[in-house]
Length: 222
Image (cartoon, rainbow, N blue to C red; front, side):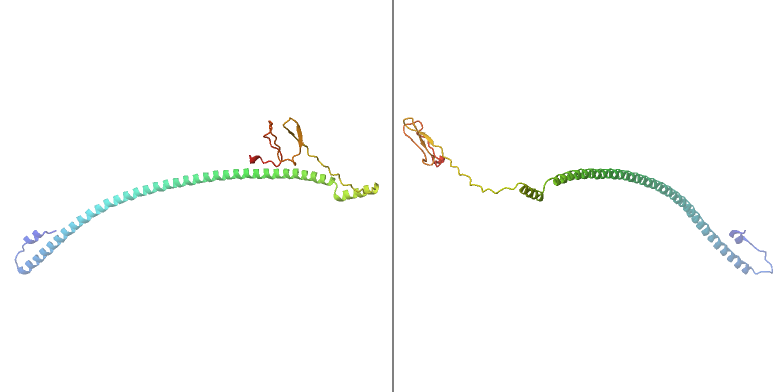
């Protein structure tokens, strides 16, 4: 492949075939074209270098992104695994707790049923006892005479043993004599005095001269 310098240094033998001016003009155009191509090639190489650098950077970034994605995936997998484990543990604990509550509820229900049936049984026993007591009382009541029986017996007795009515005399009124009260006099003798006759008795020159008697005597008056 010809270079630009080779094209510039080319020379032709002179003869009758071509005009020298046309050949020089064509060579100049070729040189311009080659220089343009060289410049474009340099630009392309520079752009390719840039693109290659970017590609390498993209590849590095891609590797970083891939590693980040892998790390994220691993973290996500670990998180999901941990979450599943925790969820399974929570479910297991909840089921165990529910089973315990259900067991306690069943035990409580059985106990309450037992208590209820015991109360019912006691109620039946009490009912039988009350019925026995009531029947005994009813039998005792039935053995007691009624007003009709008493009236019939009275008629039978009056018929079998007739009697004449006797008028009842009024009961005598008893009079109660009030006991006399003996009062000591000055000469050491006692005189009977009733409580209605004397409000109080006071004699002079006696050791009992200050004593007062009688139901009309007021203690608070002195």
